[in-house]
Image 1 (cartoon, rainbow, N blue to C red):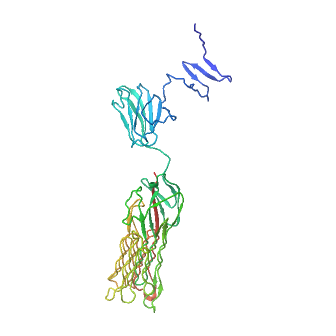
Image 2 (cartoon, helix red, strand yellow):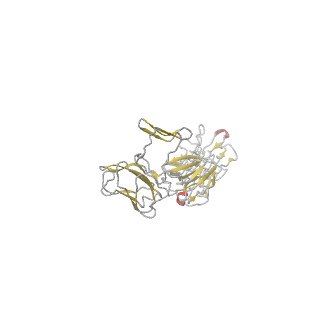
Image 3 (spheres, rainbow, N blue to C red):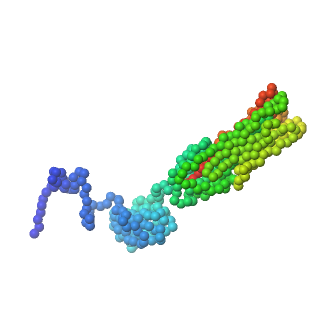
Length: 467
């Protein structure tokens, strides 16, 4: 004997409908309620919404058979294995994800049941991309299991270096911090793999000041660079200054100022006098110090001065004066080169200044004209090929048939000088390149000062992998 209860609506004690039938539509639960299927109970006829129930309590480490409506975390760090798909009927759904990001070294094989297909082909599928996650839905016997979602973009928490300081830019997977003045490179997070904490860097000191009157060009600031294996770019020929791996702390940055220009008096002064130029200031990052460029020679005031790159010689009294040494103090690879000699013993060309030393070449000797400064070094550490640390050009004498020396590629300033009636002004080294200042070679009438040019300030650039 069976019993039948016929109702349209069942209400709770508060009078809210919890089961209601209207026009063949049955509503379960009142507004705000949660309808829960009892533990161990099963359901049919409700269908799925395109999602799975993730089996977080059962991480798979060996071959297993999937069930409809479930998602799995596959740990292949120990070895490759297989996920067998269930016998598929239309609407079945299965998902799987790489639990340990090791599918590329130990793949997961997805195998269909019997003669059923995956994407229209009765064969296994291989998942071999780290972090890959896929979702299969069984459509029909023609196509079988179709992959309706395939993520090969593994979104994980950032495990790389996180840092602040300077002006920050991005190149590919690298961040670049450029310091044009003093500051702090502050690291707040490092990578668990030590190799990813080695940074690339370039440290360029301030360029030396150019000499005044028969003046030599200023030497470029010392140039030092090291390229980390995980930060791809084209480095300079001077790369290899020494590895630096960062920790989660602050690294003070010093950016050296350019040296001041030398000032010489013109011929009527007896004896000629003036003010010596100065070397550029050092730049510092961590254990790396680049030495300031040497000052150029000023007539009867100072000889050329050694530095990261050496200052150039000038003309004291009818004889050549040598340039000063570069790479002072010595490091490997060398941080700079010597300045060129200056002066002319006789003839209409007159005395001319030598070129200041550059990062990759020595300054030239001043003979019949002001000598060019030595070439700097080109690197792509900033994201584009840029030259740094060129030597300053030597000054020219007052005769109209000669010319001042050009600045070395990399921010070196051009020389200046006569004729007396319209002298050419010496050019300063370019800011934040470490270029040496140009020397002033000629005389100015009326005892006017013969002024060289200041060196350019330095720069520190740090590059690291951030993703």
